[in-house]
Length: 140
Image (cartoon, rainbow, N blue to C red; front, top):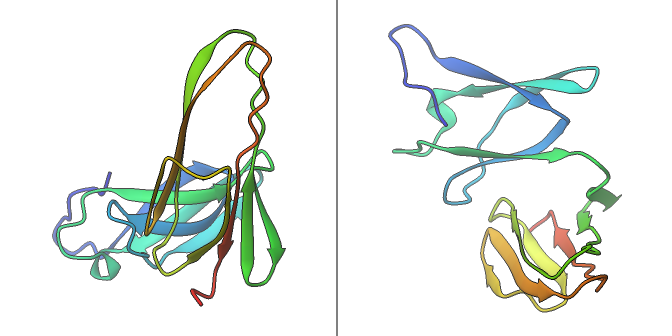
């Protein structure tokens, strides 16, 4: 949530667990930020003037639990594994700045639009599901 702007205040801060990689508004447009890392936490600072008009929500991508890896300087890979102990429906939603491009999405996502990839699947007991998403950070 974007805090309401107060007179004579040009920036706001958020404290997060993990290391921030990217920040977008609720529609997927990239938002500039600066960060300061302190142990397992990071403080990000966003200038109100860098927000798209009408932005009320921010989505911050963070490096956490090994789910996102930098394959090289132009590529990010999201991967995880689910093996449920009972039949269940799962939904995985990955949002990213729309300036990036999807290189690989396996298995085929249920939804793929600029800035968002989602998988929705029913898993049987002990059925393995290993989604993989690779993004080109240069946008080419």
